[in-house]
Image (cartoon, rainbow, N blue to C red; front, top):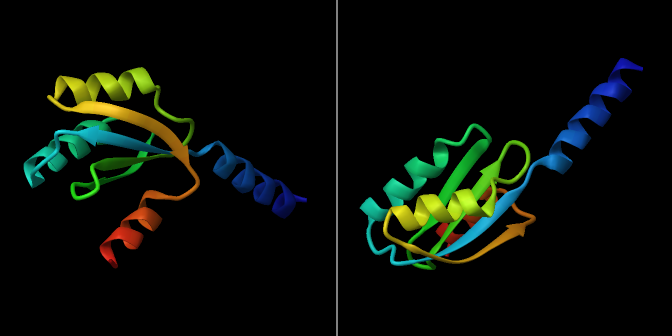
Length: 103
């Protein structure tokens, strides 16, 4: 019974985890990427952050529910960049990182 409960707990917690893809205009250098990564990493729910300068997006993987779009937009626009789109994706930040770094 304990094993079943633990299995259900693990499955249910992964269902609530979410990954957000944030499309950003204006990121042009490693310093830009580092600043955004550092700012988004400050959220308690942040599990991982991946910034792709070439493609102009940021992946924010959360331990639990997604960070509100308003908070994300505020942090990124206050840093001097434009958010063009925020969407939920079904990949982890590490999966996206590996996909783009192997190109």
